[in-house]
Amino acid sequence: MLWSHPVCGAAEPFHYSVGIDTQTSPSTAAADAATGHADLQVLHRRVTSWFDGIARDLPWREPDCSPWGVLVSEIMLQQTPVVRVLPVWHQWLERWPTPSALAGEPAGEAVRSWGRLGYPRRALRLHAAATAIVQDHGGKVPDTYTELLALPGVGSYTAAAVAAFAYGRRETVVDTNIRRVHARLVSGAALPAPALTAAEMRLAAALLPDDDETSVRWNAAVMELGALLCTARAPKCAACPVKDSCAWLAAGEPPPSYVPKGQSWHGTDRQVRGAVMAVLRLAEAPVHPDMFQREPADLGHAAEGIGVPLAALHRLNSAPEQLERALAGLLADGLAEMHDGGFRLPA
Ligand code: SF4
Image 1 (cartoon, protein in one colour):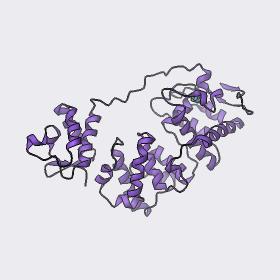
Image 2: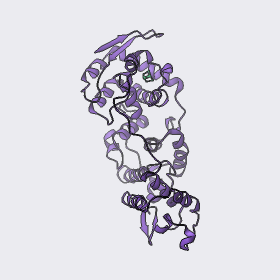
Image 3: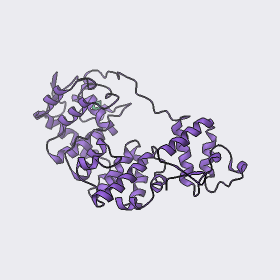
Image 4: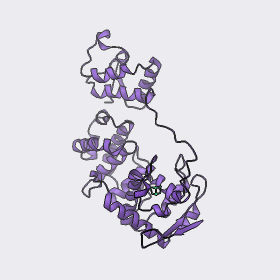
């Protein structure tokens, strides 16, 4: 269905397809309606103008930020909020300003410096990508989607984001925030499908501005709209630059068609893994497996600088099998290794 109405308080009306089921529909109607539609330019203008006025000052958005800085930020931001990423990003870029600087150190140092960002396998992925950049690209982050995608640990989102934000290329960038905005603004759904669909990618491609420069601003602006206003739990629609043309609002704010999976943490294997990693990051020597369960003094060992994270791990009172699962998982993921009968970060 093509829907259009004047934008209250704005000189220019715009319209696009609504009521698309992004979970099942091929959404070609949306693509057809959006592509080449003159009013799409109004949508672009309103969202990017809003972005120009409120965009957060983030170091990876600075014109002098290197492509390497952009790549590091994209990996760190995938599952961690900006406020927690900022200090670690600065520390990384200061210590490893280039891919070759990181590649020249053991992978364990990347894991150690990951701090408490969570999902530390991302540190290993960045180290592997840095190594490949040095070996295959002379130390320069490649500038095309295809070459970026070929780097170890770089998926289609990261490849598109780095090509767009570091090199100004026209790429269809689709992250969680952008998916949510598209679902509400265009499709009238409270949430996007649980997993990214081909229909969503077609819709995102159809909405993308034609010229490189505007496409980059559009990608960044929609992402920011999702991060600041069109949030998962409590969208701030009153402040939204496109509220008068939002399909979800027009449909009466229908509830989600499914209950999103919660991010449980307490008592989970993830919490135990995180507590073990906190110990390993500070350890200067391999940690005996028994120390993860019992007081070092009871075992006749010295805590040697790991007393605080070790005490935090012990306070979890994890069942022995859960601890064993966590340790085995860290070994399997390459985040820890056995050396002299103890656990340590990878060399
Ligand atoms: S009006 Fe509300 S739901 Fe619609 S795009 Fe804006 S913030 Fe999201």
